[in-house]
Amino acid sequence: MHIQSGVLDPGVLIVTGAAAVGAVTYAGVALRRGERRWGLAAAGAGAVLVAHLLDVPLGIGGTLTAHVIGGTLLAIAVGPWLGLLTMAGVLGFEALVLGDGGVSALGANVLVMGVAGVLVGWLVYRGVLRAVARWRGELPGDRWIVLASGVAAWVSVVASSLVLWGVYAAGAPAQLAARAWSVSIPHHLAWAVLEAAATAAIVAVGLAVAGHRARALAHADTMGVGHRHVRVVDGELEALG
Image (cartoon, rainbow, N blue to C red; front, top):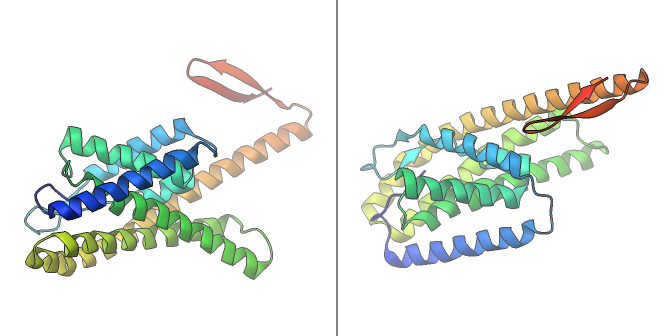
């Protein structure tokens, strides 16, 4: 989904750049009032970077590619604002160091994969969980969380694809914008299914690991063993005994 340099009009580049700066600035301010999971964000950035390297050209003159975005998973793992900042950092690294996505189009790419990919995914994820809670009259269980993450990931990719096409329609030559619609949208819908499946699977594994750990600690407490912190080189390791 990376947009290369030389595709969009200067006016569109300025508008999208300003909008991206505003979104990232707001995320930074909002993050000061919330929990910051820097370690998890760094790990997520590495995973997103690897996912973005698996580009599939869409045959539109080398100006567009398709790949897993990872925005919804970032939002679920570290929250929407840190997720947006992490995605912006990854996109900046890709543009400046790897040449994947134009530097001049960085603002547009942040809107496509950051604002749409992260924030839309988060809003859908929370919306699905709220709807389930109201319907069932209780907090959603793990299976509903997995389902919500998959639905949110699918919607986020569709939203990113629509924003990308909108940017192309506003700032790219008409023929290129028309080709982007006819070629990229079907491909991105297919990638949305892949992203939904991958996101749901990763969330399911994470919930299973967390549940196993909680049961182990609960069992230790009932046995009167409890748990203690053992210092290790790279942090703290919780160990039984």
